[in-house]
Image (tube, rainbow, N blue to C red):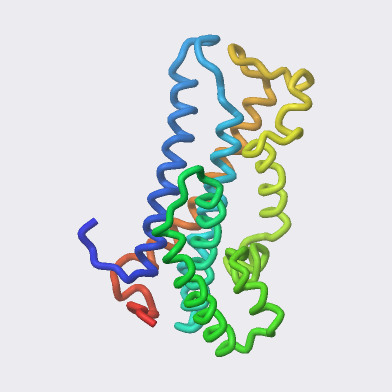
Length: 235
């Protein structure tokens, strides 16, 4: 607080605040369980798993935005892809609302082609293939080179990341993996089973590991405004 930062740093710092909030919520679940008499409160391993998945997602986006070796063209491409994804997905849910947001709809018709033009420009400067550019301007991609590309760029193990994502996503979406073996796992809301304890431990370990990697990055990247090698980008 009170420190001037670049736009890129501010994006990453807001995501860091989000990451911290997720971690504090996870810890509050653990602390409440540990402070309560046995049988008085559940160990909510469902929420711990979901929060761990969200923490990993936020960590990846922070690493993606704050990558220290980006050129200005690369960062501009990334941010305009994010801008386009934002308005494209807002359009989807706003269009489904009973009360139409005409102000948004009007601005959408102007901003979408502007963002698409920016994406074409910066992607062309970086010599991206036309088929890749066509995918980017659809507004559905978050990461220019996909999630795997972002994971590799962050220096993370791709197989580990995909295991964590596929396993924990079941708890986010209430898919069968999260509930089909409830009896075998001895799920209890008064006396948590070994599975619930182990699942909670796994979630905390995942959260701690990825948060630590983000903390290492951000302690350097966001120390001062001068820590962003690109400076303020206004293209």
